[in-house]
Amino acid sequence: MSKIRNIVILTGAGISAESGLATFRGPGGLWEGHRVEDVCTPEALAHDPELVHGFYDARRAALATAAPNAAHVALARLDAEWPGDLLIVTQNVDDLHERAGATRVLHMHGELRSALCALCGVRTEWSDDLPPGEPCPNCDAPALRPDIVFFGEMPYQMERIEQALADADLFVSIGTSGAVYPAAGFVQGARAYGADTLELNLEASAGSAYFAATRLGPASKLVPEWVDAMLA
Ligand code: APR
View 1: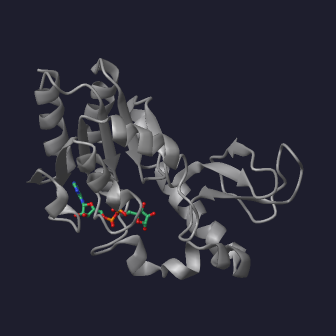
View 2 (view 1 turned 90 degrees about the vertical axis):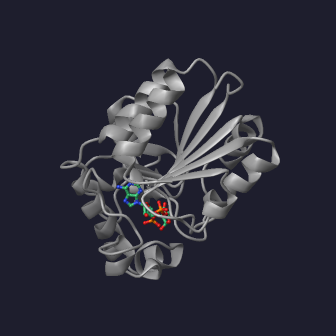
């Protein structure tokens, strides 16, 4: 463990599954009930803003009944106690990492509890329903939208992520299917820069072959075990 200083952790919907938040793919997944094209593209937002805003209102409301699980709590402990660089890059738009106490968190696909002004780009903390046409508190344009990166849009803070991967000694992926790029390619980038790689997931993923090691099981069990070993 001594040679590891800088850690990048990628999380996906699987880390929040045991908190009761639906994943996207697999039985009961969000994409089982909705077509991505209907609720998670710029075209969908333009074509049917009521449907898109309503989809995210329902997911935002679900946050009120979800709580961080042992995996989020363990990562927050690692974040607090790890002396080197550490960055939790999450594909999730929930706030469970923060509610568990993590601070070094980057939401590359946006956040449910944020509204983005499509005109001036200013973000506003938002916890209630967000109807289409809500005025922006900064520029007053009726242009607030969910602060979610839709398919076809650029994920947030990619340069910061790429720099963290270049500096990483260890890259750990937790609860993601490896189905969506650029996140799915992070393991290959980290390996190219010489980082060790570990996957913690309920089942083998599309990216498992790229990892030096894969451990299969629920995040609420695997993540605390891994954090205990890192901090031992
Ligand atoms: N513990 C660990 N892993 C789990 C658990 C669990 N309790 N439950 C499910 N998983 C795993 C599944 O096996 C699956 O590999 O989590 C993964 C969830 O995969 P997806 O539903 O595809 O979610 P994710 O990988 O986060 O999707 C990536 O796709 O639709 C877009 O923007 C969306 O951010 C999302 C991105």
